[in-house]
Length: 264
Image (cartoon, rainbow, N blue to C red; front, top):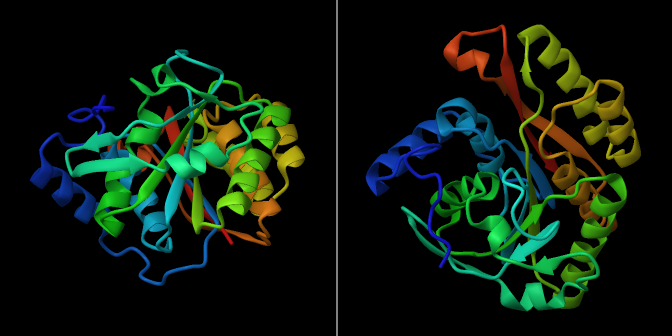
């Protein structure tokens, strides 16, 4: 059992308080379901990025399994690791899709729990999915290596597993964008990066990250999601919401950027 590592920090520890906080995030979000194959969502504390995340979760379709890709902030475990544990949150337990995990070619993805033990980027997505859908299966992949070649390999492994299992899958990339730059610089840089994501241009995305010396923490998960969804027929992406931490705390001198994007 993978127990919560950041409840009481990134989101409320109590079940009722958590549901109330998520309900606040979902207030005034779009109610039209989209035929999404993938998404980009932020992973900061709910008070900062929860509304932007909810803009995405309010539009996602129900799926057999949600694959969540997150960066490895802790440095623990294998470079690319998948968890087969049951994950618990204050809203209940979520089972891993063992059939899908077994269908992964595993040329680059290892079975490993240690990378996930204290990682928040994937954990914080689960309560949103539980609030929106109730019961579902998950596949959690933590990426310590995020170079373009690795991201492409991960994406193609995911696409192959989708074909082998013939399941309805939505692939979620967990990432915040620019970290600790001024509001003006963060918005300019993030608009530059987001343009490549909306164009489904993985190589261009990496080039732009390099040009701006980017501090995007989950660029590998974003690229892997794009690689997988493009292989599965994705044709377009849409930005649903962009925000920064400065929108909440009023400090515009050093903000973190958050984007909610869907890929169809």
